[in-house]
Length: 88
Image 1 (cartoon, rainbow, N blue to C red):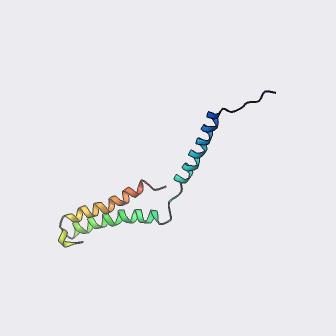
Image 2: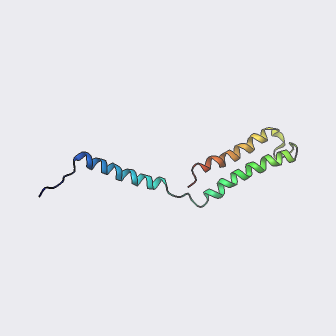
Image 3: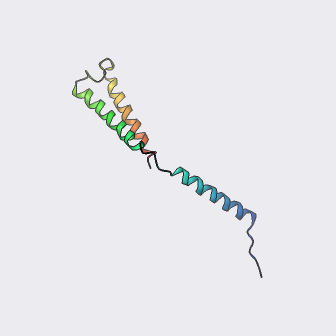
């Protein structure tokens, strides 16, 4: 009886496929439980920082920073938006 034998390139390709699928499974692991609340927390804190600045007419949250408070608020919110790219 004739017997099919896999060539060495087929064996190497199959082993690469196995390695690729095993690394893909670890890359798609779910986030920790704390990830989502922290992500939304950053976005809300940044938004609240900006709202407090406008409502207080520039007096709060940090009076000495002046209009830099807007940049700080956007920076905090931006951290939350960056975290959304890693959310699974």
